[in-house]
Length: 497
Image 1: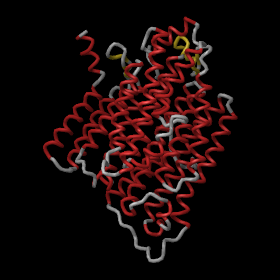
Image 2: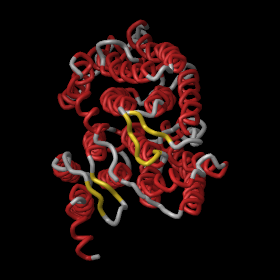
Image 3: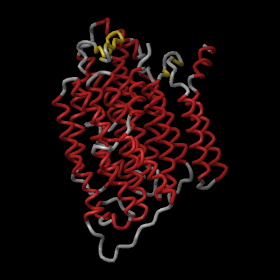
Image 4: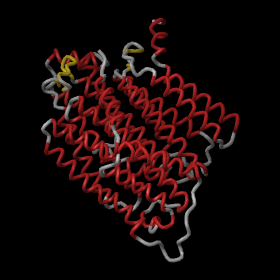
């Protein structure tokens, strides 16, 4: 047992580095006893080292800790996304007035590292118990971060709503897991797949109930309808860097475990033929995903149209974007998984970019309302042009990275003869263009109030960060071969038995 644990630790180096970084940041915070960029820098260095060791595992395929987690290119892909997004969010916090003026010191840094650790475990989990524990690690950290500004009433309110919805979905999920365990006698998703393939009991109503209950936990994490009710209020009440963190890192972790669960547990004898998953007869989970995907797209896009707060608009946008991403899972093949991974990479740049612009604007105007951004294009042209890039990318306009993501998702649907679903997604993209363009309308087509024409000034660091997100959003929209190759490799090398 000891020898097996020591061998497993060799595969656990990236997570071990994150744990050490977490402890170091706590100690530095206790020593410094004041807000300091030193803690943020230490956290970023730790994440970079962790990402380096994760990258070194790109060609590895192995099982660790008695089948609790695996190391494969698929998990490494998500670990790189988590590392990059966490580093960017920690930098965001240095620019955010909400974080800087809070009564806390540096707690946000090690809370974000803790969330990244849980996300890493979610991406690697192949045991239902491990999936649940890692999801709870991410969730509990998210609750604390969403109520970070404890003196702000709406922040405390958002944290309370998050806890209540999270506890409900978590309870439903663990009950579904217990039913599946009682049904199959195993927590390992590979063993569950083998049992269901041989037992021919998959069409049982109990199995459908298990899927729906477990999906409640995953759906809550990715803000899927009907598990989305917490999203608008939490996004609005939490500090903007935290909102961005939940929208990108936490959601990506949810998709990482969602894909692995469905694309492994209900595979007949682990069969992948010509890139298509051999789904166990009677388990119609793609139909359930279709319903959730379409509902998320429609509700997210149409409700976003009526929002006057940019934060709430981006919250409903995230619900809709989650619906688009789920389309890749519907087709149940490696082409669909590849499309999902491409879109998640695209989503990182364009969504974080939009939130960073919102941080800069909120710092100056103390509002995230559209009406407060009237004529902002005259007072901060560079910032608003960057916002235009991110808004157009989120809507899927050609020559942006968002178009590439949607192109591959729609191509996967068409290739699988799901033309009607591709058409529904395309029509929803047209609707989304309305509220994304509305932001630009206020910025560029409306003049500022009389006497309010003073230019807004931003630090050089803000412009550097802005360009670091805007340039990839445009560059990978024109030259996307590297992204596609990475995604194809991760999807092809998916799964270990």
